[in-house]
Image (cartoon, rainbow, N blue to C red; front, side, top):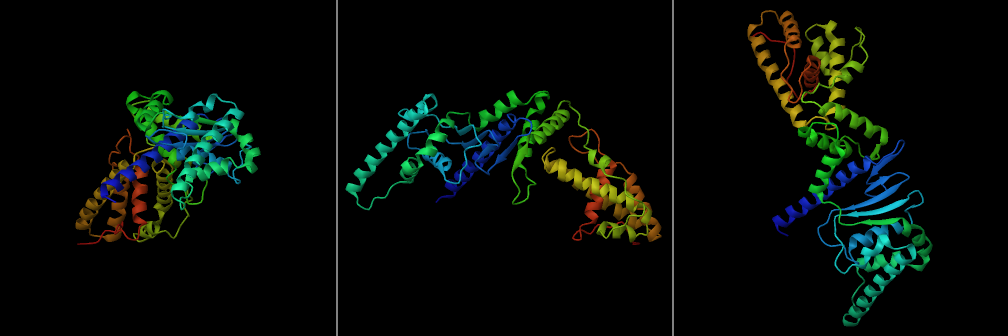
Length: 382
């Protein structure tokens, strides 16, 4: 297989994943109070108690024998699939119906007509297979034919009759670029036009759940989605953005007597400055939570945080070298360096109108806590 072929296959797979996430975002807007949306659990996208959606991003035609159709029907007919809690089972595909596809009549047909339609399709496949068997006795049934036989097995007729009226085929749906544009125009409201891409990208990142641990359910509740919409609308409704300080404000004030075994705390003890430890712990915890809850969830671009952190670290290292050259009393000068660093103006954070000193200080304590980094408050006489 050529390198070009591999690259194209990977691109198609990635675009299909992004497409599924965009459909998930659109589905989140359909949630009602108390509902939750599940991704890759019972199917591609599921709204509990309402609908289960199989999402396909393909450019070819949806024919009577296309695997997307029969794979989906096979999944819904599986003995392990419980359809009873769903009012709709939807095949959502970018594929247009083929010019000779009888399946195009599906949505306008009643349950009996739908079963007859499937049986007619299967009969054609069986005839083709029997002809092929005559020409080649070793010929085996195709995967699609096996799915047809499973779906139409008389022993499963009761289940087929129960689910067939729930099944809808949404063919010819918008492809990825057009779906993205539709979401931006129809779903993103109340924000500046120039910020709609940022809003939607943040929403896709939220649905993506990048911080989700292995084994956790990939779910979004109505309440979570409503909160995120409000939060993002507040961020992108104006040209200026206020740095998210809720975690700094919500963390309880640390007791002056609190002490810990963290490396960043030990480095403060190293300069004999215990009275600032409580303040340092507060800044450290607030920075950790802000990064986890705001930046990791793509409320802000990760590259912005990376660039800001680099600016903080570079400035710290420069000032530390200067302090070391001026050092005459290591403990006293280390305390002065600590206070001067905390009192200095932080670098600008791209995209925000403010850059709080507590976050900059928290980043420095995070860096101090890394045993692989050579960051320290103590200044050494040169």
